[in-house]
Length: 226
Length: 121
Image 1 (tube, rainbow over the protein chains, first blue to last red):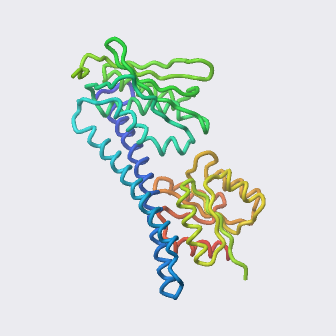
Image 2: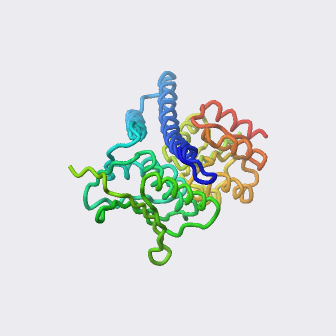
Image 3: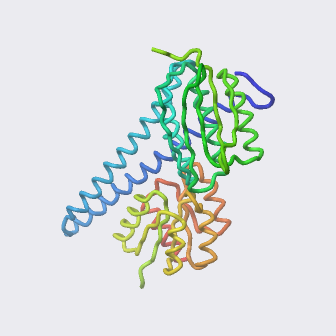
C-alpha cells in the first residue's frame, strides 16, 4: 500500500472500516436490545397470566408489532452491512453511484444521528456506473462527510450529490462550514492520498454564506457506458 | 413506603418506553424521555429518585446531561447506559458522580438491582 509522509493508506483504510463496523454494530446492538426488552415484556405478561391476570390482547398485539418492526430494522441494517462487505469483493469493480451513495448514507446513519445531522442524497440526473476501487471510493466519500461532521451543529444538513461533466464524474458533499483544526487537516491529507490512488482529485469550495462543499472528481475514462 | 421514581433517557424511543413499561410492571413509577432536552424539561417540575441515561445521544449527550442533573436535582442518582464502545466512559463517569453503569443490551434484573442499590445509597 502506498504511503505519503506519515500517513499510510492501509492504516487509514482500516480506520475507515473500523468506524463503519462500530457504527453498524452499535445500530444492531440497539435493535437487539429493544427486541430483548419487548420479549422480556411478553415474559412479564405471561407471568401475570400464570398468576391469574387476564390476557391483554391489545398489548400483546402492540408488542408483537414492535418486535416485527425492530426485526425488520435489524434485517435492513444487516442487508446494508452485507452490501458494504460485498462491495469490496474485487479491488476494482463497476459501481453504480446511485446505489453506492445511499448505501454510504445508511452506513453513516448512526454517526450522523448522534450529532443530530440530516444527511440526504440529492439524487442524480442520470445513472452513473464507475469502474474503480470500491473501498477507496467509499472511504473518500466518508472522509468528505467526516470533514463536515467534525464540527457540525445539531440540526445541520449535509447533502450528497453526484453527476457527470465531460469525461469526469464528480461527487459533491455540501454542508455548513468545515472547521480548521488538526483533525480536519489529517482528514484532508488522507483524502488527498485516497483520491490520488483513485486517479482523482478533491477540492474544498466555499458556496455562498456559511456553506462549503467538498468535491471529489474522478476520471470517467473507464465508465461502463453500456 | 413510596414507590421509586425512575426516568429513563435514551434516544431510542422504543427502548426507553419498553423499559419504563417493564419497570412499571415491577412496581416502579417509570417514565421514558427520548432526549436530554426532554429530560431536563421533565425534571424542572418532577423529582425522580433515579435517572437512567444513555451516554450517546444527539444534542446534549448523556454525560453533559448528568452534570446538569447534578446541579438541578442533586439527590437524583444516575445510572448510565453504554454501548461496548463507550464502556470506558461509563466507568470514568462513576468518578464524576454516576452511581453505576450498564452495558446494553442490559438484563432487567441487573437494572433493578442497581436501581435498588442506588436508592438505598
